[in-house]
Image: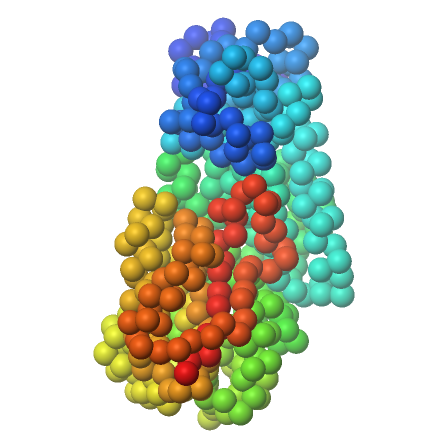
Length: 440
Ligand code: SAH
């Protein structure tokens, strides 16, 4: 059976086989048009004006869009149009997802095809070339999903380990050639492919529980890769650690904190592997407390401390629920005993509809920190929730300062590193926001 016939037979969500290889025409509602024209990659189901129908396109175009290696298993190629039928561009349609259409190109003249995606991958890797130069052991995000034009595909290069995190049905169906092409472009020793099961479930895909290792160049999987960041060595643990195995989005911010830390007593709250705390210690902090609810995260802090040969007597770990511990000012060392506090909690706002509750959660967390901190202390506080904006977060911090009765000045503002670019018309990509607040 040739590839085309295979594609046809797997289109089991389509009632008539005859229509499986057709391309859909989607008419957007009037309010759906402007974001797409500006380059926003997402169209939700409620922004589609009418039901999708078969687009009347020449057979040659249909052949081109269906040519291998593209696999249209859970998704269909679609031509997005305005309400009068004028084409706006090409996207990927998923009838099972609330996020029904993911735009790929705003040029309706050139249909999407395999080469479109290969070019996206090449461009994404090329854009990071200067950043990666002279850092062969560094940790970098090579592909940042929609922000690089490739829906639902995150690729991190952690030293010589390539980690793919897949959250869209299209990227899942096409994972084989995506992996092959990224291996060709980056020459890793090993690859870890991680399905984002929850996101894929919302896309109508049942993904395996476990990620999968493969080793293009070496025998046997090695989950304990070591990466270099800010001149220090760190364990990167795809598969057993959190997310892709290393948070490569705080590189520049950890460096900034370390630059402030000389002689200071530092609290790294929500520390994971100790990224802020250990970088601060190397920057000359007098003492560091790393706190997290996860025992394995704190083991990783200690493993990194040993790897870096950092002075054990100046580093302490605390395990517990930090929302509780901070609210009751119940850390073994009181909040007032720290000169510099980093708060980097997990995502508190899962989606836009939880925005208000999420803002209150950020406010409450920062309120207790500001209440407990000494005059002159520095609070470096982050939000990694894409569903709230920088202004939202800043507003929550202003509420916290007002309730704490403290005068607070912004001394630094932070975002994710340059390997996590933010398209101007896709503000959701700017998920990481941070402020350094001097407390008076
Ligand atoms: N600061 C880290 C990343 C933090 S990720 C870095 O620089 O890489 C968020 C961390 O918060 C995770 O390690 C998670 O285990 C921890 N966490 C989640 N809920 C928590 C809670 N209620 N109390 C303490 N830690 C928590």
